[in-house]
Image (cartoon, rainbow, N blue to C red; front, side, top):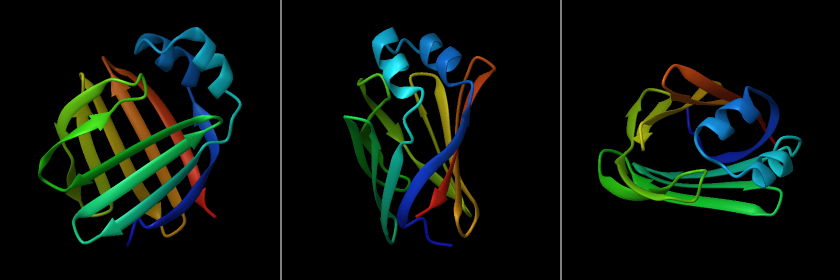
Amino acid sequence: MSFSGKYQMESHDNFESFMEAVGLPDELIQEGKDVKSISEIEETGDHFKVTVTTGTKILTNSFTIGQETELESPTGEKVNSVVMREGNKLTAILNGIEYVTELTDANTLVNTMTLSGMSYKRTSKRM
């Protein structure tokens, strides 16, 4: 399955606690907790461009599977990491946070971030 497309968040679990734990400022947590973010993914072979729009905040990362690249974390930090792909799952580790993006079916994208046993899960549907 191709990741390419636009997805709108339908639900998320543990947003406030997780974002507080990773150091996101409280005003951004309050601003983002009720906003339905939109993720746009462009997949061309092993190259990806991912743009996540949450309210006024736009986060864009481009990467090639298996190659080290600079990625921006939700806190705005730039971190070198390698994104790996296994089937319909993309994984990376940034500053100790494990990121997993999975297409669970043709229209459902699930993002999970895990740090020290605490997880945040966002479920989005293809638009």
